[in-house]
Image 1 (spheres, rainbow, N blue to C red):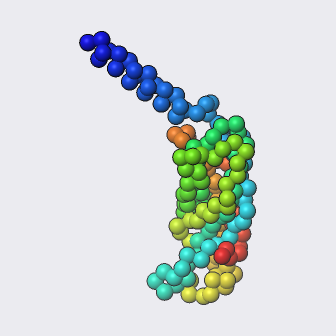
Image 2: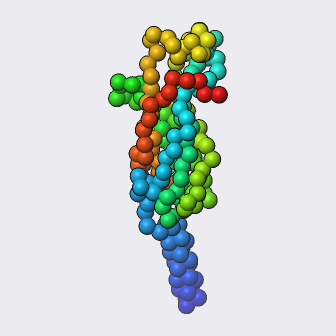
Length: 164
């Protein structure tokens, strides 16, 4: 009986140790602890869909961890909107840092986030950007790490240029 109690106690201590290790310290406010650098924005060539050229809004970013905590499983969610329209038009989701996390002071390599929705047309891609019915886009960028809530870390307009 004592051996079973000792095993249960050891298991309980081990489990609480893993739980404490997973917490990794105090929560980081990503508005303050994560620096967003927009490297470039524009329209990405998404190929040919049903015989038409497709362009989707995209942004290239870098993230710098300016906090004193490791940001494990850092994820980015981009919500794209047409300018003048509050309704969501498309989204893009990426993992910026996996289980190893983004260490304090570290910067990610350039990350590309693309919408799944965009414009299609029969004209050449560069001409599509000059079409009179073309509506510019903007993007709101959200981040989260671990099991924290999504936090808005920035927003920007999408440039009317082709990204390669």
